[in-house]
Length: 135
Image: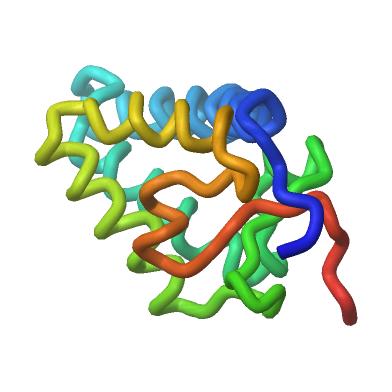
């Protein structure tokens, strides 16, 4: 694993994704459904974004691209659908089942571990790196 990325860069990328993608998505879903921004449509659409965009953009989301970090498999290769499914969907289920405690544990793992991997990274066999993709 080369150049693993720690807590602050990952947090920054997540905040940028929330501002650039999440807020407009919530507004659009609110207009479509006339419900609060915590609607089922917002959750599903955000999950699809987190699952599909890294597949199409060599591990980047919009926030990660701005920060200069991306998701890769443990061997450094690009992520595939099954990898992202495990990372995003199964990871989200685990974090939900632990009532958010898993998120807190993951934050400490990214901040304190040498390899900077969170629980969802272990589930999927991924890590976040600052290395650009090899084309």
